[in-house]
Amino acid sequence: MTDSQCSIQQVDNLFQYFRSELSSAFERLGLSTSDETQTYLVHLLENFVRLDEKKAQDVGFEHPAAFILCEALSSAGDRRIEAYRRLGDASLFSCGFFEEYLDRSNSVVPLDYYRKMGRTAYSSLQDLMEFKAPGGAFHIIYDELTQKFDTVVEAFRFLATRRESPSCAHLLEQWQKTGKVDAEDWAKMGLFPGKNSGDA
Image (cartoon, rainbow, N blue to C red; front, side, top):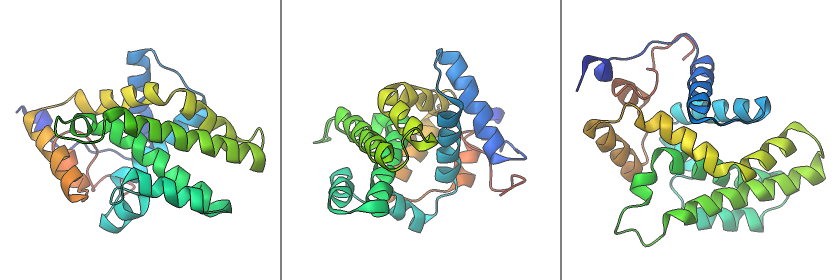
């Protein structure tokens, strides 16, 4: 492993860091979304980096996707919106950063299941927001995430794999098994900024 892979990259602002990283990934892959959707995705990345064990449970990593979908279907109003959002965001993040784990040979659930769950969640959100706030920012964002789910997954995969090493793969697998996130460990692999960043 090179020194650059082991070093912690200091950044002044996590939001700006991820905005720059995501913009670079989109440009490299020839992808595009609206500014509103890019901002949503930057916040999604920033929030997942800051997850602790309790928050990981809240966003859905501790629960099968089908359970969260059931929760959304059996809820109403803002609770339904929140459940669909958790399902969509967790599916998008997992497909982007943990696709190899999800696609392992001994898995009883095909990889496309998680992508379909994510698209279904965002499509449902788009429908709900069309009724609640037609033409609003979130209506536009969720519509675009429904249409470009796979495209955004590829951008996240680019961010996850461009500095890939065996140690990185081990760290990601360990996170998936335990449900625990340690941003400092991720930073040591060059994946995310460390806890000592300026706005942490």
